[in-house]
Image (cartoon, rainbow, N blue to C red; front, side, top):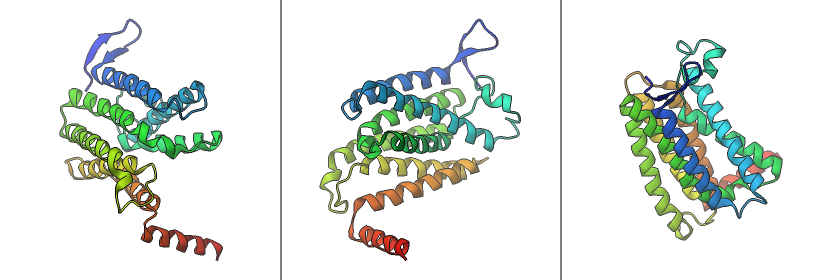
Length: 242
């Protein structure tokens, strides 16, 4: 279901509640990210390029996974592009798009992507809050309300983690990424469980979310450089050499 705020004069296009929430969240998150990271990038063009590439990757990934999970509803390539007429986006698919695109972009520009994860975390969560708020206002669905609450829990975690993680004994490396990976793990595990167990479970979303949760935990473990992590890395290096 869509709720139109303003009907536009061309075709059947309109400004929807969900579209407005997503657009405002994107503007706020992009401006916040730009202010937080402008000293990390060589110039403003790289910042804009990074934001544009990631928002495009989020949209394509979110739409692609949703369409794959709803082939009965989106049964032609034309419907894939008619987002305003056949709405639907996947949270996990969008995040996967961001991960893949960020890695490709960082490799192309020889940029250390981990160094901006702390600054990017709260703007990214702001964007996700806008996404789930818009979905909830339209559908009044339990899944979107629970996902919104999960995002708020991830925000609370982030405020604590960003202040405290460098002093934690069980995270001896103090490497940037602790808060980002922890918030990601909270979101993916929570959303995966919700998508799987709710009636009419979104199984593709659930398994993709579970896979991203495992990704976050593994990176969390490796970046900690704790003794078990160092032993595991040594074991992997030995296996590669053999």
